[in-house]
View 1 (tube, one colour):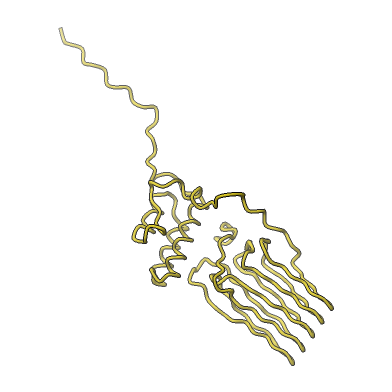
View 2: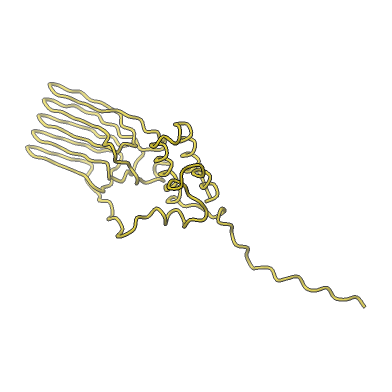
Length: 227
């Protein structure tokens, strides 16, 4: 009589997914992109390396595709599969940040002043009019909702001052008639960074647009920028 063979061990209902195969979120990709931006600013990556890794970060689908992008960087700039999920690690401790404000696309200062700063949502177009007054536009803490922001300036016996983060592109220029129109242009190393374009005219007035050193853009609507 043939001896019965022992039954094979019961198979688990579902094999656990390896951590490297877990799907990455937009927040996870953004954390890695920020680490790469910092590494580039410190001179650890060349322009070509930074652009290549940034593109790989935003196209990554899993944690396993993200981890190698920072593996050769110093520990503070490195992510690994042994750490908590990237999105959780990126969140600051303490109270959550307040929601960004929704503001009008127009700013007008007539015999007075108008200022906009802090966390506010900036769309694709902004108009600034200063007549015997001044307008201040600070984009360093703003949440960009468009890949390109066009700021249209009209300054008549007044002035418009524009500040942008140091890691976005700034381009443009305008007409100065008995006045000045100064745009300190720059091109961001990150090919996915938003672009701010300034245009318009200053008549017996002035407009100045410049990057604010030490202030980096860390928050924008990624999906809209991607396409």
